Image (cartoon, rainbow, N blue to C red; front, side):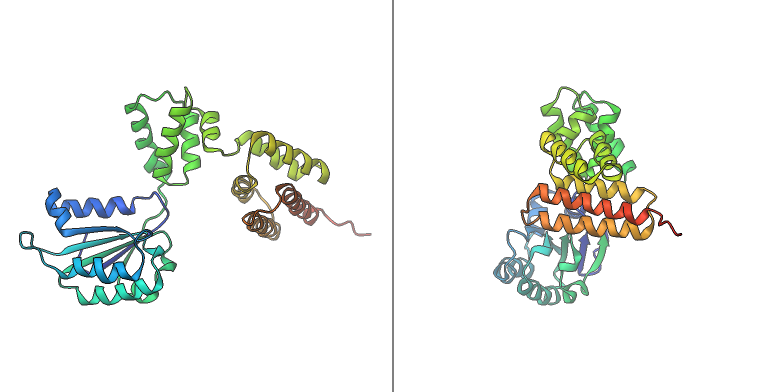
Length: 295
């Protein structure tokens, strides 16, 4: 990694290797543990995010020189998007003042939460979600090394539920291995608490084909029996309907209606009532797709 510019901003979804990459680069640059500890400062900005940390801890580290370790210091601020605005403005001045002595790396999930004045002083690197091919080989290698009893559909289920997040892949693999004798599709979905594909097929069929009251009763009963949260059902539904061949105006209405339901659920509204709203959104979509008879 090139450290010629005085600040880096690595951003992207969780579990894509942002922190691991910069720490690995720093350890390769500084070498031994004593040198790394002397020349690199790691801070989690979500815990230490106030202006006092910037003015004291960061400023002091950036402004002092080491007697036995020469070169440029590195300050790594993880979860920098959790820093207050005052702290970010103070950090802007420190980055400018200590460019000869230190380099800064800001790591965040949401680059929009970093103030423009700080973004303009950084070279930005976006970390995209990891592809299935990037994760698959590593997942199988770890499962075999740990002597896990797994099936192909179990591995596929972990990859499907991970969303490109390697940290979630490893956590789900470990949790399933601890809770079940075999890592297969059913055990993975039960461990993750996600709706099973066959249940999602049933829910989607009810939404697209059955009368309003029957769909509401059956979907609510299924979610209650299996312990599914309606927010998880909405997430799975949104991914499925995007792949279906809906007219654009109908698809837009479905996604808009489902997003409103998810928003209401975030405030703790009644799940049965919102199940009715979900069925209502799909009922309207079915009416929009019904041809109108003309005399």
